[in-house]
Length: 274
Image 1 (tube, rainbow, N blue to C red):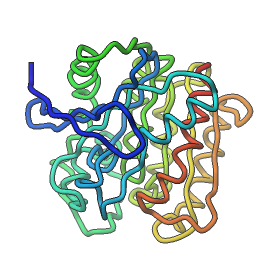
Image 2: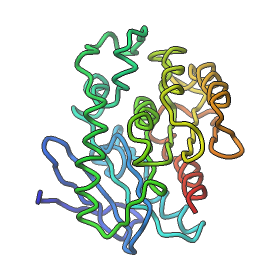
Image 3: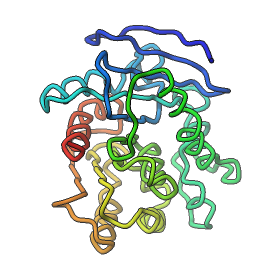
Image 4: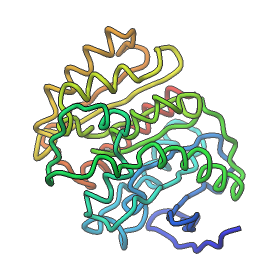
């Protein structure tokens, strides 16, 4: 069994644990009481530890989860943070993990903010397969959490939002709630929106929460997000039942913004899984 280290974060009594599985760094936080909810988070460097997070700012997912769980009188979830390859801020390396492979390789035009990248080198499918086939089972073996797809969610922002929605294409039987902050539609524009919605499971079992702000990259998402809403409704999803969207006026494309929003996405998930 791989060795792990532990450290503590502000406002949380139980430790975060870090280990390497192959070349991948994984972090996880488990509440002191056994839980039956599991949250899988992209960009693991930015989830718990200010020492590894971009601009020393984390999503504060453990703190947010504790607060929301107390409001709803449930046990907080086990949170698993998956580090992307490369360093924080290396958008090319990060994108290799978080790209929706089959959509990007379908021939649609792509408009990456940081210039061209090698589409043939993306490993988004491998990354998601490893999450569910390797990383999740390993962490479960180290905790007393009870796993069920119905109470398991995935969360991500920007390219992580794309990967979260993409995961429902091939792994919809393994988690039932997708929490997508600031989904980076602009990299593929309308064709990417259409492929993403077409790849989602039929409505009935799954819940999807989406949001974006109005500053920076987020200011460009509105028209594509609205198109996603139309296609989702045409597919049979309903904002009264299994969809939610929030526009955060003044919010930018930053870890601090997503930390401020995370309580809302977590509340949606937990409420829908009660």
